[in-house]
Length: 471
Image (cartoon, rainbow, N blue to C red; front, side):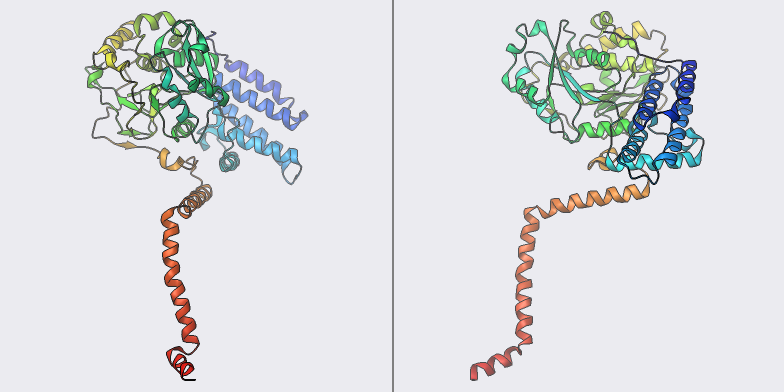
């Protein structure tokens, strides 16, 4: 696997822009978008991203605005409408344009136009320029017969991934597919990819190969002994839109320290929900519960096979966390921790039996730190927040805002429209319920009685009835 990431220097960015600037007025709409997307893609991969991102953003937005004003406004042609949709989608979901503020563009008018375009794509939920989302996991013979239960919950998500990949070691399944149950193989019809690897690096298989093969993708890791609620992937993706440079996690612990050193794993605050939707270096994600890793969020040492086998073969989460700290990547808990949905009969053979209950986590963590952080260089900023059990720093309510596909937009008109959509969905659910139908039936009876009574009164009431009988 190639660990190197394509990057461009500051000077190369300027050269790239100068070359494109000369041709912007001599291209078709399709060529224009290809140029802009290529510039955005190259910028995101650049080692100088922080230095050049705002100038590139302004370059792209200002040029696209000029093109729209010159060729698209008051134009009803299909090509013009398609181009406008592409512009809006680029501003909404491309990694270069996530969380852009007015100060980033240094032009209030330009930012207002950018924001209006972004909101149009938000209404349409147009994610065409977002990175691909790949769900990746691994398994072994003792659990392979129940993996279909995990897959069932993934293929029932409100937001489906672009790929689902299961990584299996050839030494454990020497006959390859012939050793797999039909309940698992059936998911190939839905797109499941089963990848065979020569090395059994245990839980590390779920990230090691996929991150190298798809360096620009959003990688979501899961475990083979859990099932997942249907909003898990959607919530992780929305968290990425808000926090594109953080690891987004469904479940996390709080790392604690004494005298500048990490205390025993057993003393960490497990399933800590005091810091929600707020990135922190101190949060420790448990990858199998559902964790989204954005592109290039870890030091490339993460792919050092020899070190993995030597230091942390059974503790992938610890290894990943230290590699995130080396890169300066925080973790964000997307919602309050919930009870894990464990598949029945899968815990007889589980890493937690040794990692947690026999303190193997501490042994492996010490090995990693002795190798990579003997002097505390990478941990000096971890405990700045100093969160405690009593603290509760609540950020964006990702779950409630996004349960119906809402994406936390602050534009009032967008918010109203989204609330209307949510209300309509809730009304439809109510109308389909048995309680609603029963209530309508119970209301129908007195309504019918009142109607008959009013008709009786209009016909003269009891006096008219008695006179009719006398006749």
